[in-house]
Image 1 (cartoon, one colour):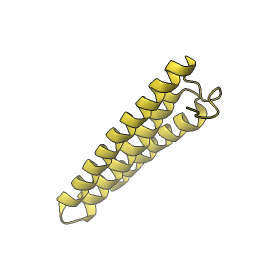
Image 2 (cartoon, helix red, strand yellow):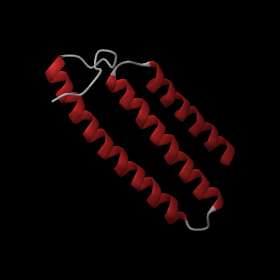
Image 3 (spheres, helix red, strand yellow):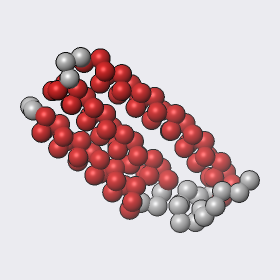
Image 4 (cartoon, helix red, strand yellow):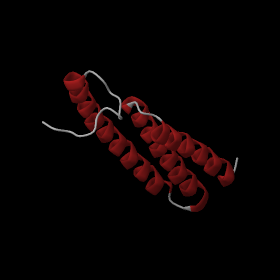
Length: 101
């Protein structure tokens, strides 16, 4: 396996995430799409780090930062999702136009 294989894998993951974000109206599906795009970025960082950089620690640290960012993003997104579902009993993007308190 070479760098091209990992780049194609990341492209497929990112494309699937982008399609999920752009075509779906459900907020949970949009969250899954965003997570797929972040995982594609992680695969890119690790592939470039493995094949080009002499020090493997740098790519691993960047991937750990991406994982931490994804965890924080999921926590905030799910909190907003729960508040919206309690207030409106739906998680459809088309029906939720604005966030008012």
